[in-house]
Image (cartoon, rainbow, N blue to C red; front, side, top):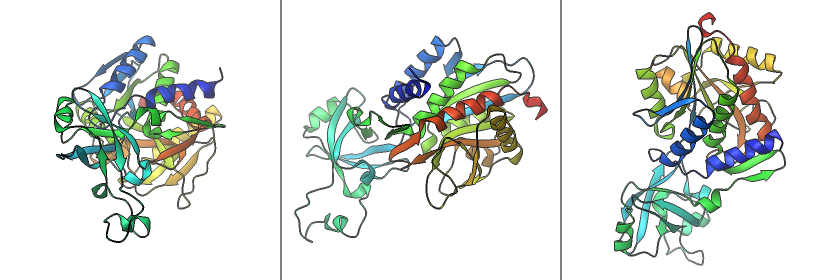
Length: 348
């Protein structure tokens, strides 16, 4: 099996682990088992981060994060007719998912329903009529049709706050030549990068903390907790890089580092170290400034929890939707970070 196929399969396994922000136990179990199989010490902290530690022989500590949570929706109200009204979980949009089966994660069991926008054969008398011509579909316009009684919904443990996601059978990724396509490449592909990196790092000079961070999509809660309680010399976030005409990013095998995003500047010196590591690894690197975007690293830096931060990303189409990314670009993130982790952080 070639490396791209192995990476595709790993990302697919991760995508199938539902992990909406704050309800991440399924992927936590997967990660703890996989890291244990690799012989790497890992544990859940109080904020729900899975933290893997690779001790160093010298000074310095580097945190590399990949958030394990995903966007979706949450239940706002349960109607007497069994319909669920929703609100956004993270920066999600209902039109991205379309009408179709969703999984509703109750406290006791997962039930299914249909994300519904209403009928099309209508006149201006129907409230959804503007969606066909002039208005975007918003969460306030849609509902989930469960065809369940209120008693059945209650028995499942579905309530306000229950998470709603695209059903698992709709989430399986698709191979498009040398690309992978599917929901939640942001950020399951980056989680795969951390796992692959964990296989490679051996006897680093500085301590490496691989942080599979929680609740990034709702404010980088996990990364902020980790860096508040455990000082690090630098933090690097693994992320997606949005392919759009407004950014100087191309769909190729070269990863991206950001100079700035919506939360502020990244550290120029750390970006230089990453660029040098990429050159040593024989990997090209793109540079960009993005706007409506933030990462664990930029949010941590903005809050003064780490002196240096950077974001390494892979070019991605349809971000926060049905995403498409080149497998080689994802794999090259592993190569760059592997080379970077060979250095002595105390000399940076």
